[in-house]
Image (cartoon, rainbow, N blue to C red; front, side, top):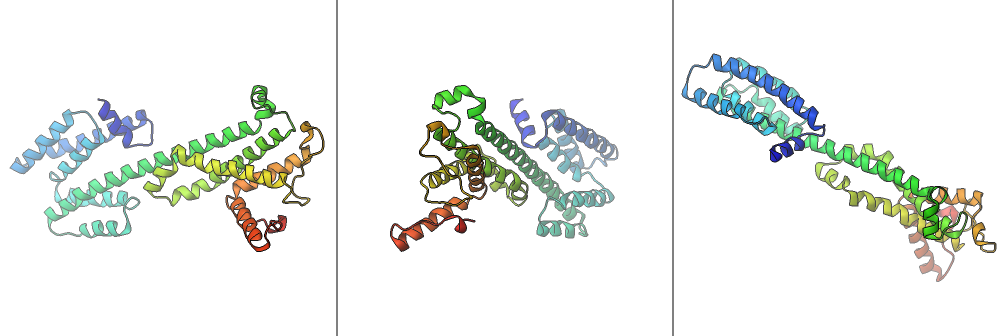
Length: 314
């Protein structure tokens, strides 16, 4: 029983209840058609064997693999007219699932004069439609998981962004006070993480549409999603120390107070600038790597010369 339930779950991105309802409806339709075929059977040996196989499968638990086998067996019981009609219907379903080359192959089989050859093509078409339908359901499952996990990570980064203000116990644990250097570092890394998560969310739709099943299998994994967020985390941290070291100076960059009290390390205006720049560094994952690369070039060219400033950042 547990294996059967696992099979059902593998065939759908819907709830188990919805899947069972669809399966029951499909079984009702198949049983009705099978009974009509059985009543008009000519009692030929091949038809008797197929009928026995279908009846045995109908007595077993309802599953998608069993239904696939039943539909394939019923092809041998169809009349020539039924084959033509069912073949055309299957081709319509297959258009969105199969590649252009595979669809063209089956479309040519529709004009096949040899009935046995046509039945063989139809049986294979049924298998392919079921198989690629299963792949599509699996892709939808991966897409749903990717969206949910990315959204949850984005919400988590927002909560962490406001942690110092909203979670006093966390501030005490990290020995952070509002406006001090620890608060600025936490703001920088959470802003970078926010930027990356936001970039992931807005690019998710286009990326998922062009991703293959193997790509989706990787993209939906928690380790992959967290690794992307970690890039934003580190980007925000590196950019903070670029600002803190004053290697980058410009009116549009945040300025830190190194002379006053620890709690006055960062005022509201500079806090806003820090959030904006660290968010951008996470959103544009190439910003910090480009900054490091240009800094390395400047050092190679001028020894310990000044690294690039705001005008060179994109």
